[in-house]
Length: 378
Image (cartoon, rainbow, N blue to C red; front, side, top):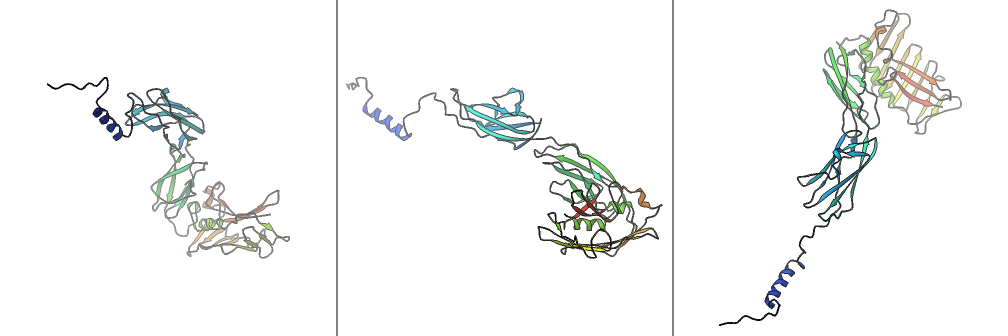
């Protein structure tokens, strides 16, 4: 009969060696039972912008066995759920943004023993809510010609337009607060515009109704003036030639020099009384040979405006050779135009009390007044 080896309270050497080998293979001593993982600082995912008073969400990646503790400065956590809601390996909160400015979120991860990580933080910009804009569009306009529509732009906002019964030709100014649109047929079209803030929140749309009249060759009427006619197109081109600085008159005020290098020379002794002519490089030339004639030359060609004080007519000739004529007398159809917005093709100047003199063109595309500054000198 065999006998058991006496161990005297010790494991056999073979057992000890086996346990040691297992420990080495596992990379170290066996972990103590019921020791929770160390919490780590979470990374908060949140929108960069949020609208004041609006509800938004923020989240962190959730780990098994962990809970989360949120705080907010500049807003409130919805329903007071500072621990957030965990689902699909994500812990999230809903919060309501406070006043316009900056909102700060923090979130700490907490293990089963109550040990907390350093809190992760996120900063959110709280922006003002968008307003329903007011559309500025002249009516009637001429079919086949472009026309302009605007809203007053607000800082930090962009604008979204639609045209029912027409087509947007261009949407400019970066924030799209203005458009050029057209309609091929006579009738009625509807303009719509919403203001959108940096958070992507859109206002209720504003709308405006525009009457579109049929094309009439050679007829200069309110619809022609309200549309993007050849004079208005040339005024837009001329306004782009305006030097970036205020110029300085020569002692005799027959020339003006600008820091940007441009120089104006006034032929025939000035610019306040015709005849005169001046140019800004090759970009624009304005000439008024008499009190009733203006010629505007840009890259688009030459546009002429001719008034006849005897016949009481006004004629505009365009670079494409077309001519537009209207009775400018007491029974003129132009008396029904929107004179608060659209002005007849003309030139003008103004001298401010502090000495600056500005030259401008009337009948442009920009409210208010639809005038375009060409230069300012002192």
